[in-house]
Image (tube, rainbow, N blue to C red; front, side, top):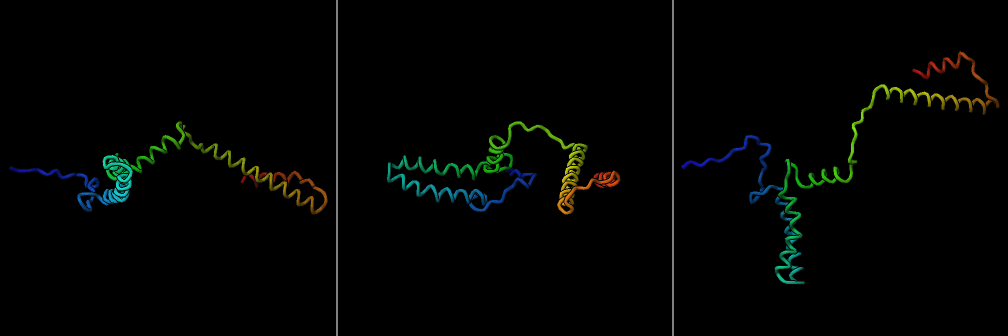
Length: 152
């Protein structure tokens, strides 16, 4: 009688097993669960009977078992929970589509340049006023030259 063993075509989904047919992640989570669960069992056994202690131990160890075994769409539980918490509690519920219009960006840049030119001209006037004791007005030609330079 021939027996067939299925061989996966996509080898990226095959995970290497370390010991007891468990991956390294699963083995680490099970060891941590045992390190937390066994002392919990003995502490609870002193307070009550063995059934109560066994139930308490299972409740303490169950989250680590979920972290070891659960996987959805190739993502482990902590990644899935992180995305769920981000989408549910942290990020806004309504995220409208927003674009940055190139023309609007140019207009903002021009407005910023005009503001800078205004601030620079005011500071020059103040320096000139402080140095000479009075403010001298510019000639029409120098104002045009200043506007032309500000546009560049």
